[in-house]
Amino acid sequence: LFSEYVGNADSPAQVRDGLLDALGDVVFVFSSIEMAKFHRDTGNPVYFYEFQHRPSEVEGVLPDFVKADHAAEIAFVFGKPFLAGDV
View 1 (cartoon, rainbow, N blue to C red):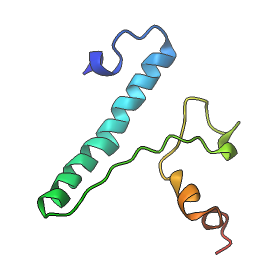
View 2 (tube, helix red, strand yellow; view 1 turned 120 degrees about the vertical axis):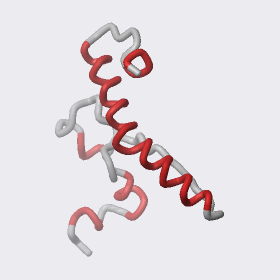
View 3 (cartoon, rainbow, N blue to C red; view 1 turned 60 degrees about the vertical axis):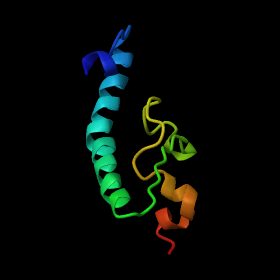
View 4 (cartoon, rainbow, N blue to C red; view 1 turned 180 degrees about the vertical axis):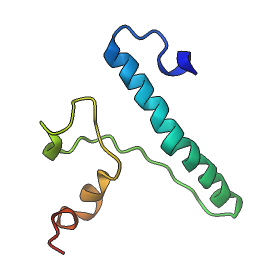
C-alpha cells in the first residue's frame, strides 16, 4: 500500500499528497464502493463522480493542494444562496 500511494515521492509534499489520497480512499471511496454494491445488487443504477473544481472563495483560505473539499459541489449544483443563509 505504501508503494501505491507514496511510491517514489521526491518531496514532503508528494508524501503528504499520497497520504491524503490514502486517507480519502479509506474514509470515502472504500465505503462508497461497498454501499454502491448493495444498491447495485437491488437492481438500482449507481453513479460516481469526483468533483475537482477549486472554488474561488477558498483562495488564500485553504492550502493550494486542496482542490475541492467535501460537499464543495453543493454551491455549484444548487447555487450559493444555500451557503449564505438567504433561504
